[in-house]
Image 1 (tube, rainbow, N blue to C red):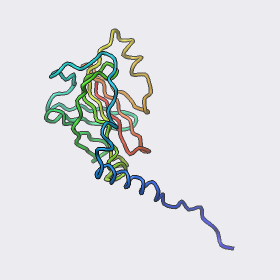
Image 2 (cartoon, rainbow, N blue to C red):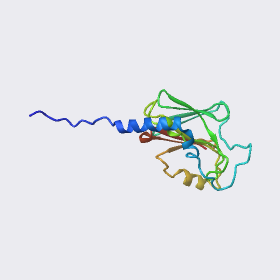
Image 3 (cartoon, rainbow, N blue to C red):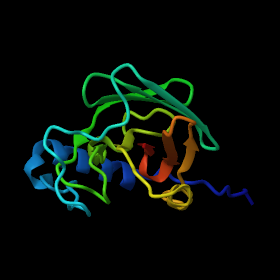
Image 4 (tube, rainbow, N blue to C red):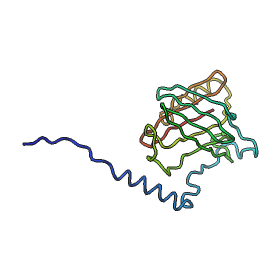
Length: 180
């Protein structure tokens, strides 16, 4: 009798679903209008013309975490370049917040899933990012805030007050990067 090997068949359904989502997003963007908007958080609207960002043009922040090295480079205005792994990089234009989100009035990119799973580098095709200023009443509040384990992110603190949180979520083809 011949031996049977336990072979895993390719998962064509997930590839088909990603392709269908990409086509729908490109052909019918109005269907997704507002799908990635977040409600205003505590603190009311952001002050017009005053963006509470951390980085300025040309600035580079690098953090080494248990999930690897992440480098963020500030380009013009809201443009950020994210580099991870040995040769992976993605340039994103972050969206400015018009209302406070959990007290923050910075920039973010929810990384709409238009190409999730396609054009990957080390399994990543999406960068979910946030950059904002955070203010705490005490050092204990800072430690408590960053000790929460959101999406398995690891936080690196710098002596100039900047913190970088970085996590890899391969099941979503994404990295999560926060600069505070």
